[in-house]
Image 1 (cartoon, rainbow, N blue to C red):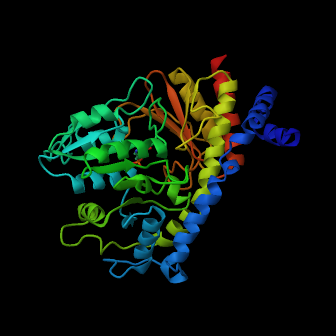
Image 2 (cartoon, helix red, strand yellow):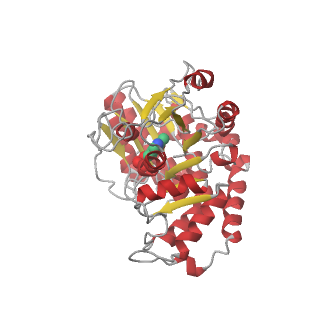
Image 3 (cartoon, rainbow, N blue to C red):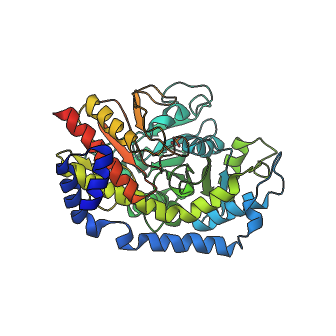
Length: 425
Ligand SMILES: *Cc1c(COP(=O)(O)O)cnc(C)c1O
């Protein structure tokens, strides 16, 4: 630690006390890192087997242009995802612009006028507000005549499945679950919790479609939502499953018909999933997926260390360093807009790109409050790379995530803490 401290200090002038604190935090975290539990190894084997089973070969790494007919790289990528997620089918496309888009396709493609969606995990992630129509928007579920209700979480942040089951009507078609905490101060939902909830719902209403927003959850545990009873999952490739290499994109996995309908929503009726040029996407999507279990472990270990470090600095954190995790998000309650800005300023200084930039709060499409974001990433907006963000609203929590290497997260934590410390004096 001494030599490293000197090296980092010569460059960034970090207070001695912060090195000592980080060193203590590292010792405390020893037994709680993701790799220690063997989860990374299990997920690596799953990814490897899915690739081998589909005879992945050099020819699959090259993409197509134009209509993208007969793109065997694309179709093999989708078979690999389907095997990995234990689903019948998957849609993994460069044309899916984000996680929100992937979830929106699953929703809009499978819900029709007069039908109803119920969220089992309270208010969904901010960017889904306009997809659902919680805030007016042309083309939202609400605009299309799809009803929506949500079952708020209990005071200790749990799902209320008994209440949900009572609220089901003959029109109810789909139940929505969000695995990750998003921008909320609540525990994320573990795979066993989701398994229990979906099992309880299906025992009464076996035909309801259970959709899981899987963003930030992939490879954090050893099982994924379809394996435990979900019908559809959706997520972003510039988060966990892209391994920091996928250039853009999103995925949906589930049974043939549900995925096909989402695919029709992506392209057009009559065209479906047979088209869509993959361009230069396939190689990075495959290689990123191959790297993803290890990258997720780097990010998780960084989050675990960040939790302990900021706890030692006196800030409330969620989850605690020694709690089991189901997503890569680390929430830190800083308590003021100034400290959120300071944290982001510090983290930005640690980024490989745009380290000279100063993050400032601003309005972003899809969000209701001003949002501050730090992250000088190789892929624009990629949050599997070290980044932090949060809506500027009380009680002023910053959400830290990502990190392609654990060492980089450490540098980021030191610089963020340094700025927070300066600002809070
Ligand atoms: C990131 C995220 C999304 C989708 O966000 P995009 O920025 O559109 O990729 C949806 N739900 C959750 C819980 C998320 O974390």
